[in-house]
Each structure stands twice: as C-alpha cells, then as structure tokens.
Image: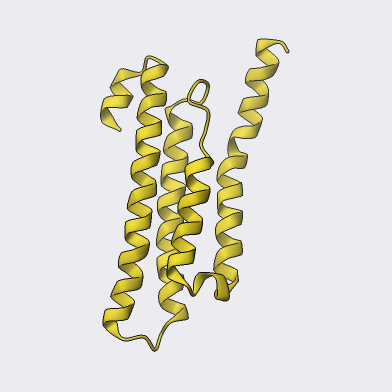
Length: 132
C-alpha cells in the first residue's frame, strides 16, 4: 500500500482503541457479577491492557497520552463501581477493594509508561521519552 494511504488509515483507526477500551469498561461495569470480584476485575483489566497497545513504530506521543488518560479514568470508574456494589462491606474490606484495584491500575500504568517511553525513544522523541 501507498505510505499516504497507510498514514490515513492509522489516523482514522486511532480513536478506535480508546473507544474499545471504554466499551470494555462499560461492559464490565454494567455486569455487577463480573466486577463484584475485585481480583477478577483487576486481573481482567491488567491482562487486556498489557496486550492492547498502540504501535511503537508509528503512533506518536499524543496517541499514548490519550490512552494513558483513558485508562486512568477507567481505573477510577472501576474502583467507584466496586464500592457501589459493596455498600455493606466494612471499611477495612472497602479499603482492600480500593487498594487491590489501585495496585492493578498502578501496575498497568507502569507497563504502559514503559511502552510509551520505548516508543518515543524509537521515534527519536527523546524529550517526550524523558518526560514520560
């Protein structure tokens, strides 16, 4: 394919990753039996998020930044929904839910930052790589 056609295709497909992530999050949040088990929910997010990454060769820093911000918001929504689903839980148990999801979110964010930094370096964007 022609390089301009390839670039245009990537531009058109770029928003689909964030939309897919939001769709997956809404599916999980809307099915309480899946989200009620905090360990299953956090493992599901970590597993899916480790595999769903932009291209290190062709996607620039704005794409990675958009994904980082979307995943932060999704992580907060997971935590809030877990607390809603367990209103009668004791404060220690509620803190445990939030802590488990927080650890999962921090783990996936760290992985995402590593990939984003590598992508920026491979594209010669050393300033962005340093700032990530």
